[in-house]
Image 1 (cartoon, rainbow, N blue to C red):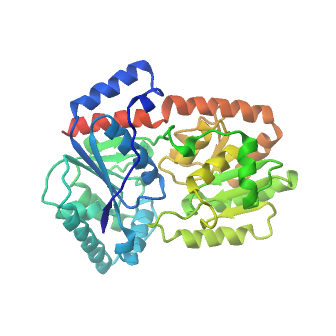
Image 2 (image 1 turned 30 degrees about the vertical axis):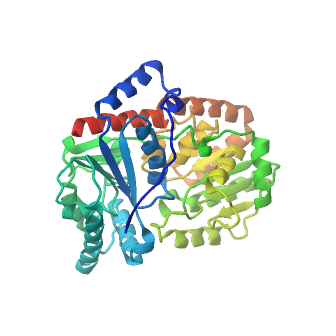
Image 3 (image 1 turned 45 degrees about the vertical axis):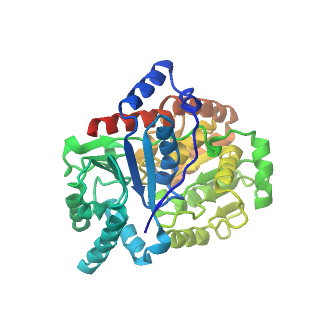
Length: 417
């Protein structure tokens, strides 16, 4: 039920420390030496798809290049009953405030599967265990090993649904620290001394962050039905109620009245195996988009050879990138687009607002009408689009690159050890 995930090799820290300031380069090397050889193990729900997997694909090899024995394990969905992931979705939605029914039988089943995770995980040696999210959270109830455990909870727990939340709070006692992406996602019922804030970051060494000329990106996308001509708006995000793709469709309908040749791409290619609700969300968007010209939806992989390359090309091809999230822990796609010097219009989610300074290096829209107005302004003002994109790139360079996040990780490991 649990599998080890292989990651790429970074031969030398010099490959990524070049993105840090001189004083920070010295700091990260010095910190890493203090826990050199220690075994740090991360466990999450899936090795593919979603922001957690994206971050671990980078953090693990960075740590290894610094002499730390970092390992990554993920749940093997092919060996886990589908019912487990349906219940996991319920817990996620309840954590974020939706009323969800979980019977005693549901909880017994969910914890039984977690016991199976623990049975397999007993063979894994670690000095520090980092568990991500609600799927394997109860596993620690069944582990005799009392070595330091850290929980990273990537959901908004500020106003959770009580009956479900009380079970989650109880198991959180097993963890030394509980990490959140931003302060707005924390819950007042948690001990303040346990709560730490770790914002997301993007890896400048990945193909996904490659910067290519817009013309080249448009040519790449042409076989997928996207015209190389005209203006292009893109949202790269899984089909999920919290990402509000229906709001993007509503805004685009208004935009089309003044800019009829503009194209919209909503790309949420289903790669994660822990999100059974995505199918229903996509069908709702598909229905809403019927009859709206120049809308391109991507949900199935189909003939896309590399999702990472396809995503990178979409962001490079775009004139405007949207992340219309209502709830978002961080939203890596925001920084990804900003790194490519694109003006990003974000939704009201706190994780999006964490990255965008409204009116300076991006825009925030609190409604579909405001989103439409922001889009039409940027479409009509190419000079402002370009200037906003340049400022966006510099913001990411200073705040949201993986080398800085890895430094924060190392500090925490050193503290718990």
